[in-house]
Image 1 (tube, helix red, strand yellow):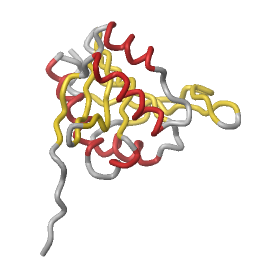
Image 2: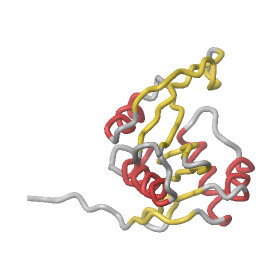
Image 3: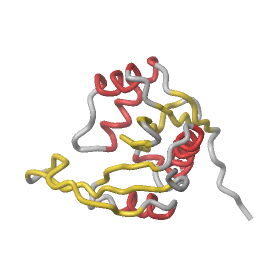
Image 4: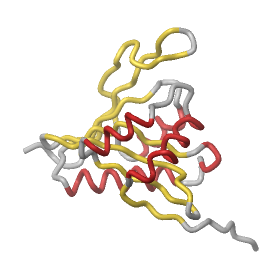
Amino acid sequence: MSAAVRPRHEIRLMQPSDLKAVAAVERAAYDYPWSLGIFRDCLLAGYYCLVLDVGGSVTGYGIMSIAAAEGHLLNLCIHPNAQRMGFGRRLLSALLLRAGDAACDKVFLEVRPSNEIALRLYHSVGFEQIGIRPAYYQAERGREDAVILAATLRPSR
């Protein structure tokens, strides 16, 4: 019987020194990536920014804003070479834990309807569709809608 060996990994707070690696993961994963400046602005704004470090290399990240008892998951990404290994679920769990610790009642996010893997992940942890944002994302042929999802972390007060 053989067992797959997982490389050492940790989820930690994003540092300014991680920004180039984070932007490289973004470029590897998306056709229309965020710029390094957007990631820098997220750090400067005080958003909750995590990185997934696998074997000493930034392999994923998650960014969430928190305000008025609500979290908004702005970006969650795992490098294509490390997808489908459970890292996205671990990173999402860490972000949701932080939202709960910050007394958030709900967490919201937008996702492309074509991103079926992400939709399955979000639905599996309790996110439900609450709407559509028409023409939200840049796409190869014009624009693509966004599916708006929300998860209730605790009952509203």
